[in-house]
Structure formats: structure tokens, C-alpha cells
Length: 104
Image (tube, rainbow, N blue to C red; front, side, top):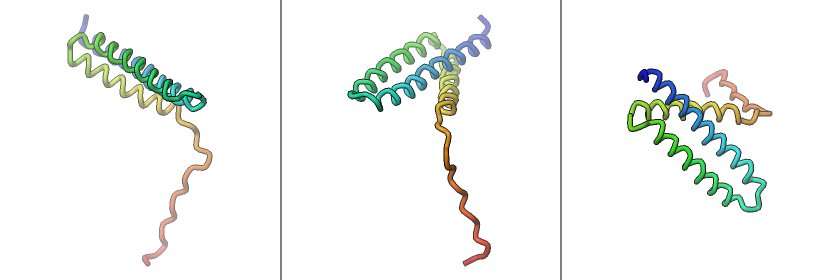
């Protein structure tokens, strides 16, 4: 397989792993807020998300540090995307302080 193609595919796989990990984290936080046993949700989700993610990184890298790095870049980009998509809209954005018209 072409090295460039392998790196691109590793980056895409990292993006999918990141979407799973951080999307699952978002879902877990929302679910645990309404749960009677939130610690069970958080701990169970952590084990599942970490297990899937670490296994995915292991298989995607195949022992090659370049594929591991590409996978990590995709993972971090997915974090940014999930953070943007799950952000709540601000109802009252903070006001910018007015500048002083003269020195005190």
C-alpha cells in the first residue's frame, strides 16, 4: 500500500476513534446528569471508550510511528469538531468592557 494512502487512512481512522471517544464522553455526561448512579455511567463509559480507542490505535498504527502520529492528529481534530458541534449557544454573550476615554 502507498505510504501516503496509509497515513491518510490512519488519520481518518483516528478521526473516527476521536468522534467515538469524545462523542461518547458528551453522551455520558448528559446521561449521568439524569442518572441515579452517575459514577457507574462515568466509570463504565471510561472503560469502554478507553478500551476501544486504545485497541483502535494499536491496530491502526501497526507498529509504525508515522501511522500512530497520523491517527493521533485525526483524533485531536475530531476532538475539536465534537467540541464545536456539542457547544451550547450562548444566550447573553459577555459584553466587551468599554475603553477609558482618558487616562486616570
